[in-house]
Image (cartoon, each protein chain N blue to C red):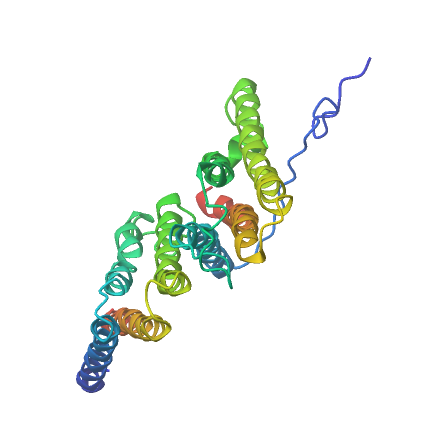
Length: 131
Length: 184
């Protein structure tokens, strides 16, 4: 995976930039900066999982699932992700932002979150190659 | 007079049969993600109604008439009750409720069951309260459909909170057998 790593990183950073571009455009085109919250939410989305992942037990029982903190982290992660999708929809429903801004911020946010997911998956693969 | 059998106590009204499914651990993970998603969906459904009410338009076709009804504190009460109930139900140690032999004393089991009952009562009360709010505040007043949405959003919030709690409970008690096998 070492030679393909550079291309992956370049592709992912490109996708991340496109995602942020979409979100910032959805704010700037209608000069209403509320959709910027979507970027913040999606960037914060993997944080609970990352924080609580190490509470799951020691090295002997690495894949032992069933501790409370790990479950809490997963619960909070999916809560934040669904919040990121729901916030622009709610704002568009109340006609605070335009439907175009809603669609663009949702697409941008899912690009950003997909980038984060793909990045962590790629890193995990490389680590397991090392082991 | 014979003593009741140890695995069946006729004095108990509410048996809490824990389904001992041994599904894969991925089912558990998926269940918890699903519960979190349902939880967010529930709260955003209601917040959508609240935000919509705060930015409410007058009824369609009559621009002069102010909106006849708003989401007030009464609409928030069922959701808060459901949230408290969900918190209580999911904070209980499930081994205590099951009351296995050698798990603490009997009084602790009794108290855990009482608190579990209070949690379920809070959730059911939230659901019933949301239906009451829908009927008394919105349906019986013959508001236009634009405003009855607030009541329906409230009911769906509470239904989704209850579903989320059920999914969380089931997915957390799924792999208990698996845990036992590992920890012993």
